[in-house]
Image (cartoon, rainbow, N blue to C red; front, side):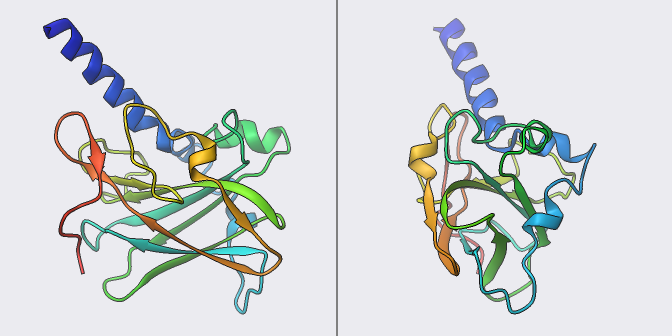
Length: 184
């Protein structure tokens, strides 16, 4: 039983780190994908307006990363995707102190994509298992593995596309989920 608990704990830690696998590379190349990802003023598309819900608090930064719509490329290292000429976009912003939390990320064009959202509460540019939050389009239930691309797929058109992502934080030893009482 103790061995099963150790294996389960190792799996949970490994899985928790998958949603932000590309974040580890941010330190070496913090601007990778940012120029393509930033929305311009009066942006009409193609872009995604992400409404963020379920924040634990109003500190830190939010980082959204856009990926191709397949399991192989979803959450892949940003350097690998860009060097292969594949879709990758990144947008970072400080969490606003009050009001709605909305960020905009440009897409290469209409189509299907996947996306991850990180609430980097301590702004260390790394995923903190016990403190940071993660979320995905369609708000899938997070289990002991990364979500499949098909579970977090969304479609964009030629204009602005609105989606909502509810953040998940560590709840107990082996699970992530939305907070019962998120910050206002």
